Length: 113
Image (cartoon, rainbow, N blue to C red; front, side, top):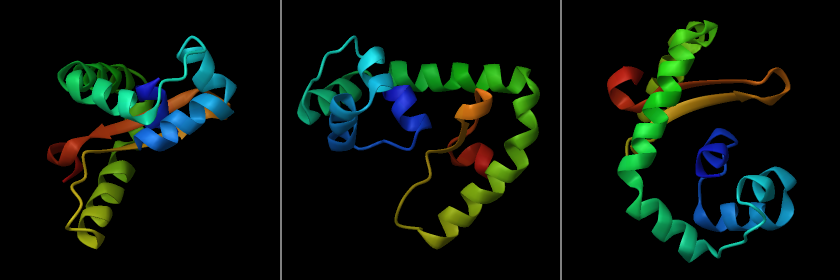
Protein backbone atom coordinates (compact mmCIF):
# COMPACT_ATOMS: atom_id res chain seq x y z
CA UNK A 1 0.00 0.00 0.00
CA UNK A 2 2.89 2.36 0.79
CA UNK A 3 4.55 1.69 -2.57
CA UNK A 4 1.27 2.26 -4.40
CA UNK A 5 0.75 5.46 -2.44
CA UNK A 6 4.18 6.75 -3.39
CA UNK A 7 3.56 5.89 -7.04
CA UNK A 8 0.28 7.83 -6.91
CA UNK A 9 1.85 10.81 -5.17
CA UNK A 10 0.17 10.08 -1.83
CA UNK A 11 3.08 10.17 0.60
CA UNK A 12 1.90 11.70 3.87
CA UNK A 13 0.54 9.39 6.54
CA UNK A 14 -2.63 11.46 6.89
CA UNK A 15 -3.34 11.32 3.16
CA UNK A 16 -2.66 7.59 3.07
CA UNK A 17 -5.12 7.09 5.93
CA UNK A 18 -7.70 9.17 4.06
CA UNK A 19 -7.06 7.21 0.84
CA UNK A 20 -7.73 3.99 2.75
CA UNK A 21 -11.21 5.33 3.49
CA UNK A 22 -11.93 6.87 0.09
CA UNK A 23 -10.31 4.75 -2.63
CA UNK A 24 -11.03 1.14 -3.48
CA UNK A 25 -7.51 0.42 -4.73
CA UNK A 26 -5.97 1.44 -1.41
CA UNK A 27 -8.60 -0.58 0.48
CA UNK A 28 -7.88 -3.64 -1.62
CA UNK A 29 -4.12 -3.39 -1.05
CA UNK A 30 -4.67 -2.96 2.70
CA UNK A 31 -7.12 -5.90 2.87
CA UNK A 32 -9.87 -3.45 3.86
CA UNK A 33 -7.98 -2.44 7.00
CA UNK A 34 -8.02 1.24 7.89
CA UNK A 35 -5.20 2.09 10.29
CA UNK A 36 -4.92 5.67 11.47
CA UNK A 37 -2.11 7.94 10.28
CA UNK A 38 0.03 7.32 13.37
CA UNK A 39 0.05 3.58 12.74
CA UNK A 40 0.96 4.12 9.09
CA UNK A 41 3.79 6.45 10.07
CA UNK A 42 5.10 4.03 12.71
CA UNK A 43 4.97 1.19 10.17
CA UNK A 44 6.91 3.24 7.65
CA UNK A 45 9.57 4.13 10.22
CA UNK A 46 10.09 0.59 11.47
CA UNK A 47 10.21 -0.90 7.97
CA UNK A 48 12.29 1.77 6.24
CA UNK A 49 15.12 -0.59 5.27
CA UNK A 50 12.69 -3.09 3.77
CA UNK A 51 10.89 -0.33 1.87
CA UNK A 52 14.20 0.90 0.45
CA UNK A 53 14.92 -2.64 -0.74
CA UNK A 54 11.49 -2.82 -2.34
CA UNK A 55 12.05 0.46 -4.18
CA UNK A 56 15.42 -0.80 -5.42
CA UNK A 57 13.77 -3.98 -6.70
CA UNK A 58 11.11 -1.93 -8.52
CA UNK A 59 13.89 0.13 -10.09
CA UNK A 60 15.63 -3.03 -11.27
CA UNK A 61 12.41 -4.25 -12.86
CA UNK A 62 11.90 -0.89 -14.55
CA UNK A 63 15.47 -0.93 -15.78
CA UNK A 64 14.97 -4.38 -17.28
CA UNK A 65 12.00 -3.11 -19.28
CA UNK A 66 11.59 -0.31 -21.77
CA UNK A 67 10.73 2.05 -18.92
CA UNK A 68 14.44 2.76 -18.56
CA UNK A 69 14.08 5.20 -21.47
CA UNK A 70 12.32 7.64 -19.11
CA UNK A 71 15.32 7.95 -16.79
CA UNK A 72 16.95 10.99 -18.47
CA UNK A 73 13.74 13.01 -18.12
CA UNK A 74 13.30 11.90 -14.52
CA UNK A 75 16.89 12.82 -13.66
CA UNK A 76 16.41 16.26 -15.19
CA UNK A 77 13.17 16.73 -13.24
CA UNK A 78 14.85 15.67 -9.99
CA UNK A 79 17.68 18.15 -10.61
CA UNK A 80 15.17 20.95 -11.25
CA UNK A 81 13.28 20.15 -8.06
CA UNK A 82 16.52 20.06 -6.05
CA UNK A 83 17.45 23.49 -7.42
CA UNK A 84 14.03 24.97 -6.73
CA UNK A 85 13.74 23.45 -3.24
CA UNK A 86 17.24 23.04 -1.74
CA UNK A 87 15.70 22.71 1.74
CA UNK A 88 13.86 19.51 0.72
CA UNK A 89 15.93 16.44 -0.16
CA UNK A 90 14.93 14.61 -3.32
CA UNK A 91 14.71 10.95 -2.36
CA UNK A 92 13.29 9.78 -5.65
CA UNK A 93 11.12 10.69 -8.61
CA UNK A 94 8.41 8.56 -10.15
CA UNK A 95 6.00 8.70 -13.06
CA UNK A 96 2.84 6.67 -12.77
CA UNK A 97 1.02 5.92 -16.00
CA UNK A 98 -1.94 3.96 -14.69
CA UNK A 99 -3.76 3.78 -18.00
CA UNK A 100 -0.80 2.02 -19.56
CA UNK A 101 0.19 0.02 -16.48
CA UNK A 102 3.65 1.56 -16.32
CA UNK A 103 5.69 3.10 -13.53
CA UNK A 104 9.07 4.72 -14.14
CA UNK A 105 11.20 5.69 -11.17
CA UNK A 106 14.60 7.14 -10.41
CA UNK A 107 15.86 6.53 -6.90
CA UNK A 108 17.61 9.16 -4.85
CA UNK A 109 19.95 11.99 -5.68
CA UNK A 110 22.84 9.75 -6.68
CA UNK A 111 20.98 8.76 -9.87
CA UNK A 112 19.15 12.04 -10.22
CA UNK A 113 22.35 14.00 -10.99
